[in-house]
Image (tube, rainbow, N blue to C red; front, side, top):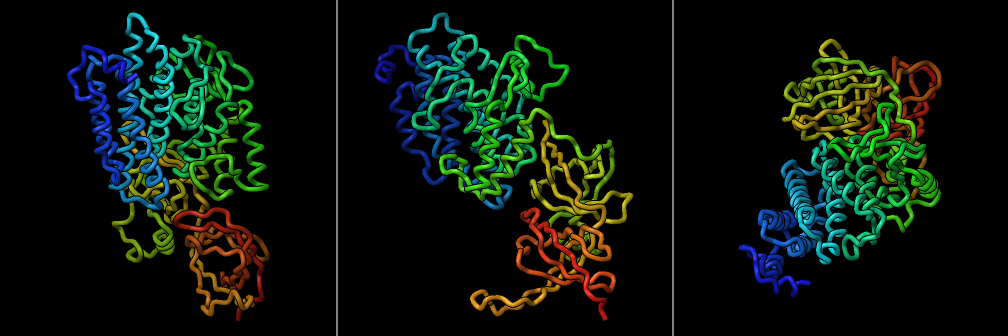
Length: 519
């Protein structure tokens, strides 16, 4: 094909009119700096898209070379972005921007091919041959753009949904949605345009704003794994839970009574994938993560199960109900974050681990018995992540409440909105003293166990019971018992279970046994 293209007489005024120049540019890419390499490729993709004189087939040949040259650099950036425990703001911005801008330029280039083909007076045999690849790669790219937007909890631009709609609508008219196509050689095997469409809309309705990046990565791979089992229909059926209008630019949504059956409405849902999802949950509980399932990395089975349970809830035919009624509220919230600062706030130790400068001021939008919805000032948003630990109180309150960031979203103005689950109405600082217990000689370290400062979330009542405690991250042990003094009474605490482990904390439950009154 390249020799045939080079035999064309009329060539555009562009270096890539000669395809050998493309090979030269690719050979000079920075191997050790993937962001710089993608920036270079983005420049050339943009320049090719600006030249109208390229024929569709030549344009596609050039884009194909540039697109595939970026794959290894994208994989490196994705690994660095997802696997780093804590990126500096500059690093995070550089990695995210480099990859997302490349995705945008690749997507725009394929869309240019699509539009150019649509405007052609007559579709040649060569154009018919490459057109499924143009559309399938454009759809795959839209899914990747959505994923990277969700990694930053940002809203997907309306163009993402608009382009998805017009590409799929055209494929339906051609009758090619179920035709198998190998989108990239050796990558992910065969797919269909219907599967690529469903992967995008199913990711869009999976409540990614409550998933940390690593869990979003798992969710995306599970969606890919199950995409052949999703259902799509032009009519409302019992298997369809969500819908998407091909004649608009709005994201997919759960089906409501107001959604009538119109020509451009498409109804979709998990379908048979739900049963497969439940079977997969059972397999992982029994034997761990199956080797044949690619999750993009190696993860703890419990970590994977949490994602699968999340998807099961949001793919079900009934939307998850709120546990507490939400009420509109506009109020200032004082907020500190991290275990040490939260502990100090509860203890009233201003000027200790934190001072007035460390207290952030957020605006509460709504409140319920279970927590707050709040707006975060842009300059204070760097540390915020799903699972982050905070202490907060309104101007009318005198005590700090402990909460966990459960949901993050970003509006069109790049203003962050967070959902915070409050763990209790009040919290108290207490100290746990280790109880010496015999251990096997092989396990003895010779180092005495230290007292643990913790945050008590459950009111202590006389007699036996169960307590919820927040410990510093990594401090919970299923084998260590403690004693605790509250109101001149001594209690023995036996570890029951680790409820949740975060970057800042361990949330654990302990069985409480009251002992003889202290002297």
